[in-house]
Amino acid sequence: MKKEDSYDKEEVGLARYLVLGIVVLILIVSVVQSFQINAIKSGTIDAYAITKTDSSYDQMMREMHPEQYAGNQENQMVGGC
Image 1 (cartoon, rainbow, N blue to C red):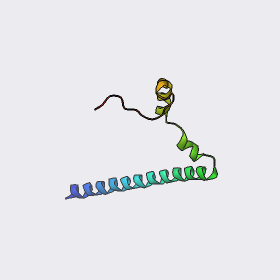
Image 2: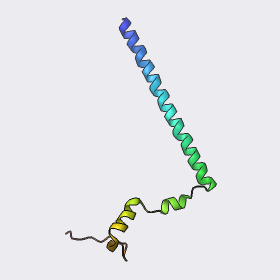
Image 3: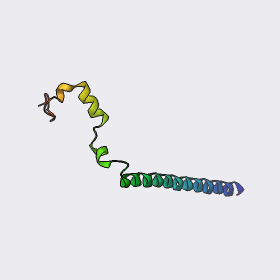
Image 4: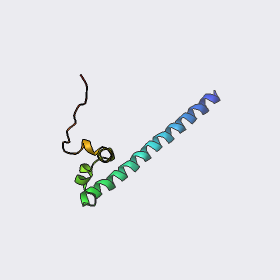
């Protein structure tokens, strides 16, 4: 009977640490996001410029395959049925 009681106490202790860890993680994420929101509101980060910048993939494709980006930016199907 004592083994079962000690096992239950260990489970409760682990569960408490798990819940505490999740709460701390949520708190850290919320603090980071509050700083990000304040930076956007104060204008230190230009949100429009961030959304309008090309991804590194698009930039790489433009540099590696300039003939595809020469005039027309539309995707063209090559081959197919």
